Image (cartoon, rainbow, N blue to C red):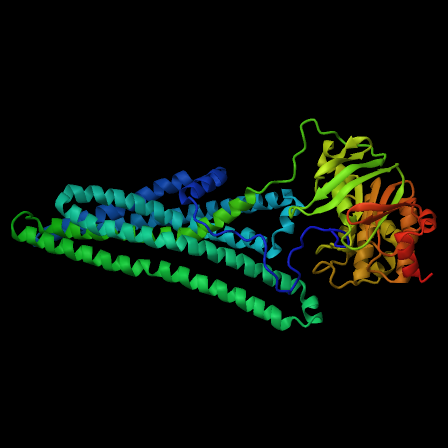
Length: 602
């Protein structure tokens, strides 16, 4: 909403260093619970995962059988036999292993994008449902980070790590069975190394999980600062804040760098240490198996060869799983941040008995309305006002008095704290929200244009409008002249939210958009604040024609634009201070009269 009235706490001004809001608190959560919830969210989009499971099991067959075949070959060689059959079997195993892994990657390549598409759709749908109060308390860049970086981390984990994890799990089970069948005693020795790797993994990942979540949080903060600095670059330059903005960026970037170094150092030390433990385990098994062979406990040299290979096959998956589990920390951190957004309270849903709003007369009543934003500060107090259908209402008052808040409540961007607002005799909360908002044509102080054609921007709330309808709407508010001067007139595609247009031209386009909606209730929130006096007079004449027969609300600082209103409401400190026509308020000789004389010099 515009900022001329009492507005919710704004996000950081572009390029100006201020404490960030809406930060994710770093605290450990249940990884298993997060993964289970993630699975519940994506399982309907995971067709083919059962086949991945089967292929992973088959892929582990080579790891389980090849040491046995190798041991048999060593035994045959020691006995002077030909090993052609064993070599052919080994080649067949390796080819089979490659085929299974190729099929895994091929199928996963189709599953992973579907899952990520579903996650992004789910998040974007949630963003569409969230109330404005949520966006008031979060940086846009930080929210974009959740939708892009966090989802990308989940994508990487699903596509790269999941198949490896499944294969390693099957390999561990198969190799353990073969080791127990070969030598239970040597298996116990090998388990000592596995126990150390498991303990080390638990200690390291407990630390890295917190660090990776901190890194994702700081990345979101940095993205927010970058987005605000770029979008508000003109403000940064105008106020000579380049050095301060650079310092703010450096501080946040260095913080991200520091926590990234810690996270990567902790996670990076895991693999070298597990390699050392694995080598010590392998050495211990080799020594014990040699002693057992010398004492006659083992007579088959090929069995020792097979077991040593099984030790490698057994401990290697644990090392890989430890590394994969460590990489899961980034994905889980991203999933937790994603679920934090999904758990936010959406806009109130329509009740089952919500009323349709097909025909709007436009009679509005404020019945002892009070409102406070999330900060708890009372913005409106005891607003009572009855507005007959077709009335042209002007709302004026000092900045921060609560003018725009009244409009926010009327359109149900926020709900009243107490009291009620009636439209045609019914509480607006009783209507279907979509129907209610379709009843309003809105022009905000902050223009919002999109990277679409001029025609599509004007027809934003009326997608089936013809070019003639768009042109007529533009002519009514005086926008047609400058639009025709654009390279492709109404087919000109705007870039960067209409940055190539002046502020006044952008405002005229948003007014044309409201004209085209032909809504029964019109809201003009500082519609003439960004135009020159000549254009203002054009808009004023257009507004008189546009507001004819409609209930309309005009918020303005320029009192010359509201003197023709049927009723003028002066808001001060969240209360109605004065009310009446222009002539009545001038005769009252109160605050409105003072404001008018000050502006006009009379």
